[in-house]
Image 1 (cartoon, one colour):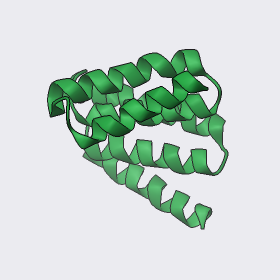
Image 2 (cartoon, rainbow, N blue to C red):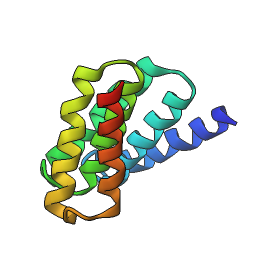
Image 3 (cartoon, rainbow, N blue to C red):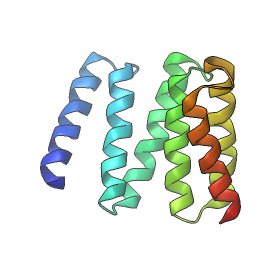
Amino acid sequence: DFENARRHYKRACELGRRMGEESWLFVVSLNDLAELLRAQGKYDEAEPLYKRAIAIGEASLGPDHPMLAARYNNLSNFLRAEGKYDEAEPLYKRAIAIGEASLGPDHPHLARMRKNLDNLRRA
């Protein structure tokens, strides 16, 4: 049930915020809430949460932190689904660059990100 899940994600965001908006728990909670809103078709609510999660993560962890690769990938997937290909492509590339630098070029998460970029290029 989406509404029950939404309540739980909002609660997680509140708990994360109490730990400090720079906390990784808050960043992950924002991203997860964005994913839920996307699944519900609430795109206008989801996009700013993806972007906020990235901005906070970059400010608190640094722009090349490996946890940001997944956040960029999620935002890119969202933008691709919205038909915003020109916005999605550089973010996919950013996710891959962060992943390669921090996880190594053969890490399994990178295969998914590269496939997502390939799917975008075929669209």
